[in-house]
Amino acid sequence: GDRMEPSGMDGTQKISDLLINRKVPRHLRTRVPVMCDNGGSEGGERILWVVGQRRSRQATVRSETAQVVLFEAETIL
Image (cartoon, rainbow, N blue to C red; front, side, top):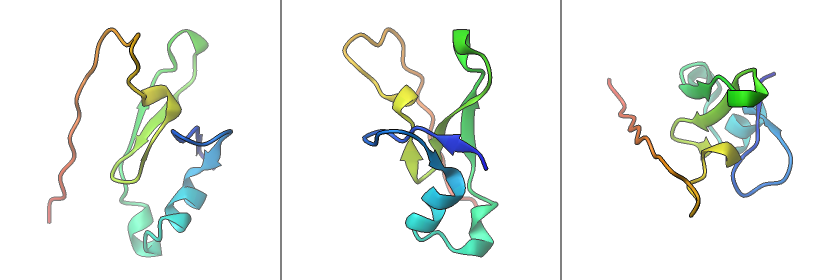
């Protein structure tokens, strides 16, 4: 399973475990969008945001952050 480094936690967590812990119903879990990057100089994709659930440690805005991109998600029925 895909893993991320949740903001405010040490280590990594499986996305499936995150969704279970957040009580997302099983039938909706495959519909939760996930935002990734290309990993920058580290290579490989990193999960930055499980939309509506949790941000990754890599997506934290800090005092040394030079640029910010704002993404918003909206539920469409």
